[in-house]
Image (cartoon, rainbow, N blue to C red; front, side, top):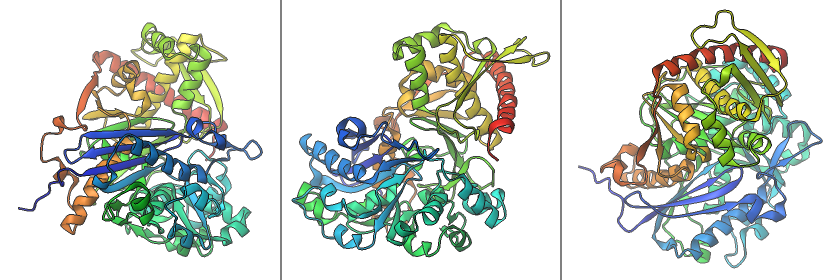
Length: 558
């Protein structure tokens, strides 16, 4: 019988390069956390002058970017923090990572020579500052590429055909439309680019001192990869930009080895020269790994800067909303996902305006208002939303004659404001009613066998109680609310194991002992309780979708 054990005494390092921070989680061979660190971009790297990790371009509607060099400097800083915590880098057997999905990096011609010959006595940022043909990276929050999306969909035969090919219709944040926009509006910069990386493959490239491949799972978030063949779609490349395939490099499985760690990190931080860098992937795929989702009946909600709902499917069903990616830890299944741009920042905005910037007051409002909010429904879009496709704006409605038993005779009245407590409940209930409705429409299980919550807001018991009642199932949490860096560390161990075996092995091979003894243990956080309340939420959800459809017809983009 093949030995699937991890080497005792070794560590596995996972990073999460997200919108607002860079996090690190280190696991031991028993999959328990031995170290954690974080670099907050705004506060730890204030000289970049970002707000929530980004720049919002007021001159171009919907353009949101982040300084590429900030991510580089953050890597040095977090390694320095881990060094100060007395972490023995020499015990790290492998490293992997999570990158915010859809962000893109543009390496200037000739940068490979700089990357492969970094001086370990000098910081990374000083050496790589001149390596980018575009200094500010378009990220997932950007919505300035609507025209490019329409053109790409038209060129391949429509939105559904593109979804059939790539797993998603064209979305403004996806890397393909972003590249096409640069090709059209900044041709000199495009011509000066020798490699285009995703945030995930960019960070992996720094660690190996060479250009890393884009992995299959994160590659599916580009509108460029044939999801069935796991290869670049020549048809779509041709309608996106000339000479694009050469600039993208190769694709690779998420469990594959990107390379060994570069001498820069061996000499500067005393990593072992045999430390493996496993392919980095996107933040949501890493969360799927970190939450140990393994059944089509499982569902997860990640509550962060963006809110996402994701699960596992054994087949790819083309759809005009939501996304399908290859499962990063299972070669025979897919990850299905819905993404909301208005997550934690929108909740914080309501907290600041209605609850004196206090989560305690926010939670007291949730506790002291009745479920269903007296028929008050709110739609809160601080940023251009993805699901539904609606512009910035807040919309409030009251359902008159709503009895919670029938929608007969219900009248909808639009209002300009709610009282503070109702506003708080409306922003919470509205998001999860939308999630449940769109998840069901996308074919995700209803109710789920279990629902696992992660992300910053998963620490809020009042919010999770609403989730349980709206979805009608038990809600679980893992010990760490940061499932992306946890998933990256877990994938580092999985990739090490696959490399040792010389083939793909199921990630379940890592769990030969009881998960309850590890940092991956799931604990019950909230239960739905009253089935009658679940049924009432089902009615409210149906009415919310009707109103949402009217808003999309009136204000949305097709």
